Image (cartoon, rainbow, N blue to C red; front, side, top):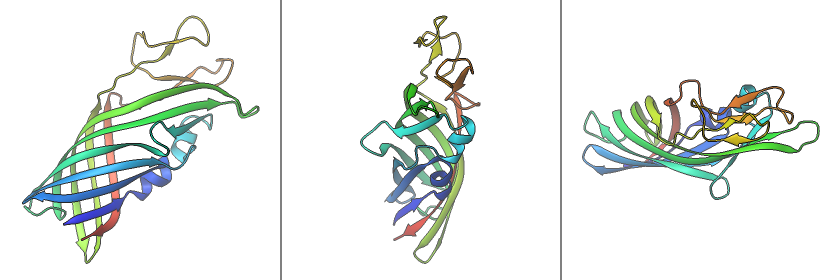
Length: 199
């Protein structure tokens, strides 16, 4: 079997469209490749988190930020139906820019490659040619970059006393810094709800 799916919630809320391409490779094993495209520079979640100051772009080839690859082990012995346990590795690059809303001028930017490993449990259902898939995973960030401001305003360093990926929130640095890492960093959670077709 072969399946093509997409996660509409991730696309609408985070502005990132992953095309899930999955194929059976052995009796109870499948392989999945998920190229991801950045479709919105200021999606709702990013706008809410950074008050509209910080936008995102792909740091890959055009809108392609990178991809995720996984191996799935199907508990009922038949790929693309029922329950699955996955081992997932991601490698996706993003460029975040902080812009003054009055002048439209960029005053800070950060590039970061999200390289993560997840353990994932999911479930798939098939109705004729249509399929719906969902699940949850827990993982860890493997590319633990740090960025903080030194004692000199506007000068940033990777030699930081604690984890954080700082980006300025205003040109004068009077409003402090935003952190591009999640609040659970370096632990990361993955939630997927995908719709598509299966052949």
